[in-house]
Length: 432
Image 1: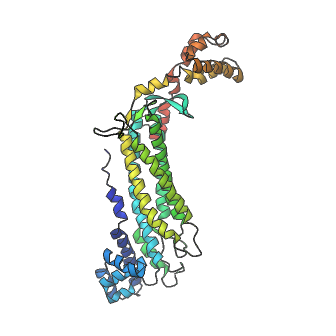
Image 2: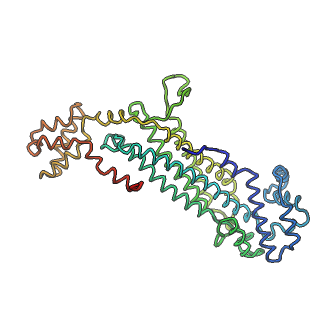
Image 3: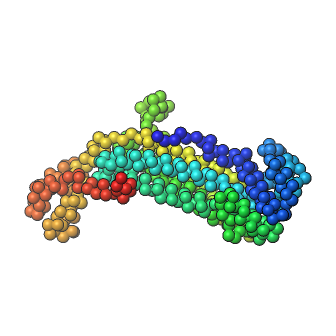
């Protein structure tokens, strides 16, 4: 059973309330560290911990004047705390709060994305096992190649998503770096052990060296990872769209009762979910490009990255969360047509067995070049005239001078292509 999807779970991470709460958590942890060092009097620290709070609407009101969100936030907090608020933000700079909180928020978002990937992996495994022996034609360049099974296609997707899970886990760790090192990262007015204390309690690591900001190569890696995951979903969705074409119709998105495919044509059943995912993947790749552009900043920093991240951080994580859940449901409800797969497999009059004929002839002592020419001649005739490839081979004197009718019969067995399917599945899913 796929867990019920709630878009609000990811959206709430990026709410103003949660974002400012993270800022306050960081400020309070810094105060706590400074209190342990005797820099903040015990009484003042107790007052700060007891009274510190904020009002979102008040912050927005103050920011209209200050044009600076962190100052507006600190002003709101000071209105709750009173005189002892002078100890808050002591020796810190805005980026200490912004970058450290962004790391925490992206970690929270990563956990939901990893959960979404896990749900998709479970559905892909179920679909793969259910269709392990569901025979279909494999295609290269869009042209019939040799038989595979639909389960192998699902196993392939499963392994790609498994790699994406590993990428996502690495990206989560890469982004989990904070800084409490002051205006240009030199700890001029705050000791390094304050940074150690704050980051440890937030579950992240201090950047070993920073300027005024945590360096944006970390964020570029993170958003590039999201784009790779989205591109995999795009790839899978495109395959479903191709399989749902009327001329192919080997698989189809579930079409619910009452659903409509066209305002003009009542017969239409379109792969709208897959198309939606393919379109959204384009947007995800643009976010990765924007994050890459953020890597190069002026000197110790400028704020050209800030406006970008305010858009792409919530948008990209919310969007990929949506895409993962949408595609998971799509696969879980995907309709597979085994009979249509078999019909399509046989529509090319047996030319898909050409490689096995080639190898059999080689095994009988014919050079590869001569064998290829003999097989291709008959395969092209089968293509062009719609004649059964097998019968053409049986009528070819040159070929039958080397092969027996039983050799031909043995070649034209679909099972020859599938003898290692179990081996592949064991490698992917394990023998259990």
